[in-house]
Image 1 (cartoon, rainbow, N blue to C red):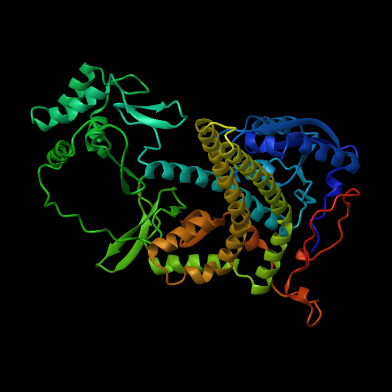
Image 2: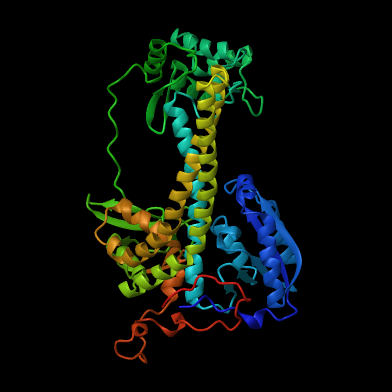
Length: 534
């Protein structure tokens, strides 16, 4: 299979275009994924394709940070200039940060040129082109999620070192020490007031409401608004284990390095009082887990369709009638399950098609692999340079040319930098694998969805349906729903055998719209995007 054919009819020789370049971090901009390099690539491409770039938009910022100023400005520009219908960008992950970006640009009805990938996407693109592109968008989103995961790992590491990794609770403040580390210290003004809260409540002389008023009189207020702290906020303070010196993070208790404001014995006594001095309260029986709860709305009034257990074993679903009496009758869970099973069955395609698209994605991923390899090479070179410095400094120390104190100071600094490079190298290696693996797993999920749905526990069925479907509605005993992208493209594509295919021909099981053909608008000389194979 070749790359997607450019829609030459939608981009005449005098067509106007906008160019968009982005790096996800400032460090990335410095390391070589530079804006000028992207701009030069787009300008050369426009010249060879007979396009005229009327304006350029650039973003340099953290990929997970809300709001890309110039991306939003570009969208506004395209909406305001109906004569500019072409967008040039280096590749998929430079353009999209999440699925919302994809939908936003798709609604503009423009031709998007992914220059390094040799793809032009427009309204006239084949379903196979849109499908593979949708998988790449999800892969790009996974790359961003990976960055977030690395940040969470750093927070987990701080927790294991006994340092609270987030905003300090009331009575404490976040402080950066001279060595650059962020720690938690007692607030000299608010800390004593919070400490007194535990003693006051343990005395039994104050209710929570009275305690809130007393705390406000001492100067304890809401951090953001400056208003008196609500009773619920005082309750949260008294419940927080953090004030004993321990803290709960990700379901695990850690011993903190911060100074406690209440002894464990005092905190435990307060907990007993908040619990009504009773440890014998029985947990209420678990409610029935309805498989399709929260998934479907009533087609008549848009209220939720909820489950109800009849005679202890039969499950029926019905409209809540929140907006008034609804005419939609009750429906058995088995009926809904049958409708949903038939709907998911539209995702069925053969093992051969799965293998074919997987191969196409692997081939198109070669550019991403090269970028990760280049980054690893640069980082490893810096790591080795520091190692050479350490060795030279050690020899100088043995020869008496460098004082021991200076050597230890420099070596500690260089080893810390080496650790940082090692972490970045590990991240690039992991990201290189997960970026592609996520797309392949997504395809495999679609391929196995009908089988996975059958005989699964209610919670797993609900999770799978939420991932695949949206806008589910039940009206007049009929279910309607939309597949989420890119599963909608899978459902719309005909994977049945080609009646005109020759016996033994590999293409005979793939519909013609998925077949390869030569691009109608070949790439400029010297430009060699990785080719997809049939």
